Image: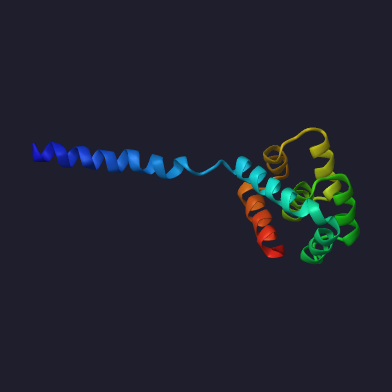
Length: 132
């Protein structure tokens, strides 16, 4: 009887506990969309200030004109994600813009350019926390 209980508890902790730990975590695509949405909500109120912060943050990686052009065409979160993917893939931002306008999602763009979406997510989160 005691052995059955111990075995049952062992099986519960072995198989069910890990599933509950992972159930609260969003897939990377959904988490990236959530971060982009938060950037959009917070930064759309003062685009001039956001543009200044973004240019300063990506100063070494992208030309200021690039940031300005992206913000005229895309939401703040999408613009940042395009810059991040461009930086990680070492591809021109215009290539990513073309793919995005063609209707491709962030996962498909990242895969096509050989970038891991988890790295994109990390860098977008770092940007968000870096500019406040």
